[in-house]
Length: 248
Image (cartoon, rainbow, N blue to C red; front, side, top):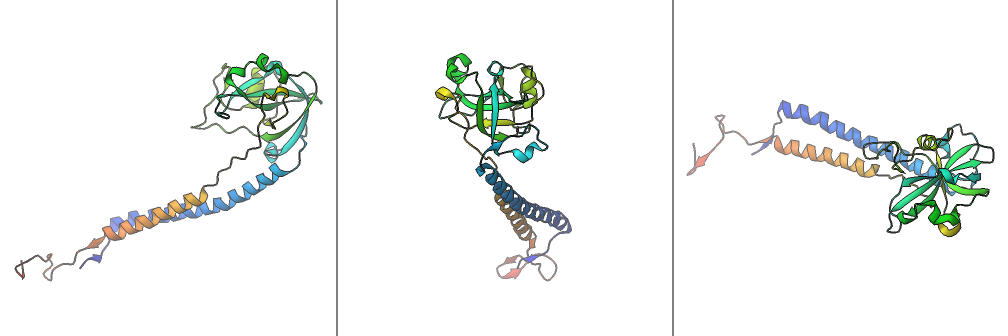
């Protein structure tokens, strides 16, 4: 009959590994609560009525996802193109245009999507007015660079990643706030650029991660128990083998 007789080596390997997995699972549960609170706070910001964006922001992160209004004149001769996701099955760009505010300060406005064949400003002249405008939009901060986030190529015509200070410097503008206002749809004469509907992209996969770590811990315990079972020994210390009813 098999009995559970674990080796010292297997025990020293398994116990720390199981404790680590349980710890990671518990940490993910804490992250789950934090992310849920963050998403609720962001949704409250996004649902609030638009307010004028202050000229000076002590903490730009406190304004992310807020609905705001900004007034001034677009500097269309300094617009930039940002690589965009496909929109309604079309490839294209997002048009980022500096806006000189009424107080003289400049910030970047992402005016939204244009198809590839409308990248030239002359092809959408109706939306390139020179008069004063008041834009309603959503404050967004640039995503951090990372392994899976393509970086920008110096001197390229199209930007791969939002980088307000570098973009402003590329068109000869002074320092701008480290954010962009994403213009809401329906504000461009002629429909282009198309604007950007409010979007909150905060995935919450922490429960899945927690269950994965806990599942791995249970699996490792099961493997440990099953692998450390030993067959019973014969009375003389040898394994019993029987032939014709006799122990040999």
